[in-house]
Structure formats: C-alpha cells, structure tokens
Image 1 (cartoon, rainbow, N blue to C red):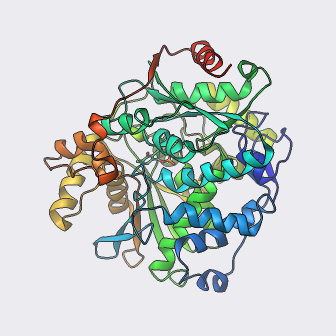
Image 2: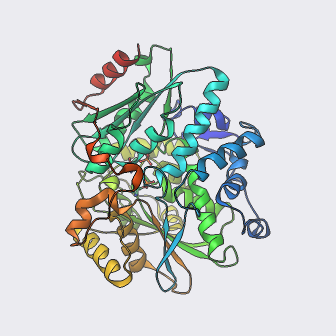
Image 3: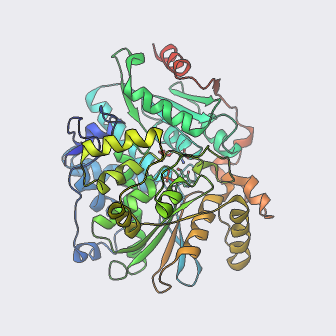
Length: 463
Ligand SMILES: Cc1ncc(COP(=O)(O)O)c(C=O)c1O
Ligand SMILES: N[C@@H](CCOP(=O)(O)O)C(=O)O
C-alpha cells in the first residue's frame, strides 16, 4: 500500500513511513493511493469476530508489508483486550432504532484511545526495530493529549510534547495529561486556543531545524494516517452488530478536526453500506456553515461546553477536499492557500457531491445541556456534551426512521462534570483506575503563544 500527499509534491511513502511522520513535506496530508474494497459477502463473514480480529481484517490492507501478519495480530490483540468493556465498543440503545456507540472504555475514557493505544504500540515496534529515537509533538483540545501520552508512555524511544490551550480544557482532562509520570513526557499549556496549538504543530513540521537534524518529528494528531485507519474499524463493528452489511446504517459524529467522520467516509468507500453520515458541530460551526451555505468562512473560536470540539480549522477536511477535487494535488494546494486567507465557495457540482455524502447540524450550549437532560429523563442514559451534540444532530437531520441511527459516543461524561452539572444532573464518579486523579501531583509548563518559545523549550529539554 502506497500513500500520496494531498498536495501532490511530496514523495510516496509506505505505511510505516507515514506512521513515522505527520504533515507531508509539501504541507499536505498523506492518504492511501487506493482505498481497499470489500464485498458484502466478505464483510458479512466477519459478523462473529471479536473486535481485535475484525480490526485486523479492516486495517491490514492499509498496513501492507510494513508489519508482518503475526506482529500486527499480536499488537491488535494487546491493544483491544486492554479496554475495560468486553465488547470494546458496546452499543447502547437510547430510543427506537437509535443507539450510542460507546467509544470511551479505553484507559483515558475517550474515543482517541482506539487509535492512540494502537499507534503507541506500532511506534514502539518500529522504533525498536530501527533503533531510532523520535520527538512526538501533538496539540490537544483535551482528549488527544492524555490518550497520546497514555499510548506512548512506555516507548523508550520517544520524547512527547503535548500542547494544550491554558485553562481551556476540563479539569479531569488536564489532570489526565499532567499527572502521568515519566521523564519523556512534557505537557505545555499555551496561552492561546487550540487552533494556535495546532498551527504550531504544523509549523514545526514545516521547519524542523529546532531538532538539529538529529531526531525525526512524529505526529499523534489525526494528521497522522495511522490515527484514521484505527477509527474506521468501529464503523464496521457497529454495523455488523446491528445486522449490517445487509442493513444500511446512519452515523452521527460529533466533529472537531474531521478525523472521526472521515474514518466513516472511508468505511463507506470500502464497501460498508452507510446511508447517512452527519457532521455534528458545536458553535464552532465552520463545517456546518460550509455544507449548508457553501461558504468556508473562519469565525473566531468560541469556548463552549464541549471543549474538545472547540476548533476552527479542521485538519482532516483537507483529505475530503482532495477527493472532491478529483485527487488533483495542484488544485487542492491552490484551494488550501485560498482557504487560509479568504472566504471560499466550491463550484456547485462539487458542493452537491459533498452534500450527498454528508448532512450537518450545529448545536449551541443551551441545546447541548437540554439534550443531556432530555435523554437522561427519557432513557436514564447520561451523555457527555460532545455525544449530546451528536444525538441532537441525529434527531434533527435523520432521513429514515427505519435505518438504525448510531451516534458515536466519543467521551465518558465523567470528563465533563461542569457540563453535567449545568444540565442539572449529578456527575458519575471516576472509575477505579482514576479514583485519586484529583489528588495526584500535576506537572506542566505554561508558555506564551509563540512558536519560538515552544521550540526553545523542546530544544532545551532534549539536547
Ligand atoms: C470527545 C470528543 N468528541 C469529538 C471530537 C471530534 O473528533 P474529530 O476531531 O475527529 O472530529 C473530539 C476531538 O476532536 C473529542 O475529543
Ligand atoms: N479533540 C481533539 C483535538 C485534536 O484532534 P485530533 O483528532 O487531530 O487529535 C482533542 O481532544 O485533543
């Protein structure tokens, strides 16, 4: 399997090299040259498989010969047998033909564990084989940070630097990152917002001179294709558990960086019958405005009850635009340049293609609170604020009541106690492995919103 850059100028790479990088050298994102296809019969034959075996079927064509079959199977088994729920990604029915796919039974209680528990193990395997040490840099609006640290903390060949917006993640989220001990773990609170953090990561890939040519820079955000690939699996898993592929499914996906929903789009391209994919956003609704009005226009970032989705520039949207531009890297590079500085509309043919693929809906804080309360009163099921946005969007945009509607349950409500209290409900207790989280000692550095300051910090730490 070969990977190409969305901007058409970077060298083609195999899966292992894509895993060991972030942005392509031309500033684009790596995508598979061809998407693997499965027949309905083949998908059907996986109906009884446990999660890790299904993951092997879905992921192995993307991995190609980068990891041998035995190693990949071992790593997948280790990854998913570590989840707290036996089903790994259980479905909870919340109404007639309406479900939440619980993706928060990993160690950090958010869907990011599905990919980052795997990515950490793949990295470890690869770096040990190569006898190479790397620097990881990541930006987080709350969940990627702890999942990335948890996933890579055992890797001896890694120094990890995670940037989060100072005072803009929940207390549980911050403590989950800043209390993990390890000399190779470095948390940085940036006096800015998530977009500032993400921008600094992208700029770091563009100019890596601060690493003095001695270390490779690796991404843990969903700009790294290995993140997306792991997230495709649970679309297959949910569908197979509800009678797919003989039945079509609809998915509603709380969206920030467009990684999780992009994984659903790929699952559909691979042959999974998905009737509807819903982009559910909070007030940072650039994607909803784009899909509904054909206007890509950046508004200032707003802080909401769903902080992990407080994102303006969605990195993975570029991967979709690449397909809408018929995979023409040159045209895409021009479009991305324009989108960086002005309001952009697509031509109508491309826009209608995008609208055939996705519905969208934006939810404000009051409605998020109301939805948490309403679902709890109806079904005694407690949603986290991100999942609540997915459920609300599903209910508002559903096209066919006979098709099962699955909202991705992206985080456990215990991570967002303030939002739960605002909805007038009682927050659950932390699970046993985190029960003393509020007493643990925290370690992080606060830095100004300045790339040079961050690079100096990294340099001083590792050299
Ligand atoms: C809890 C939660 N829900 C939803 C999202 C959005 O996912 P994505 O960025 O893949 O669109 C995130 C992070 O981005 C998250 O942490
Ligand atoms: N919501 C994320 C933001 C980063 O997204 P990613 O999918 O690119 O890692 C977070 O919680 O950190």
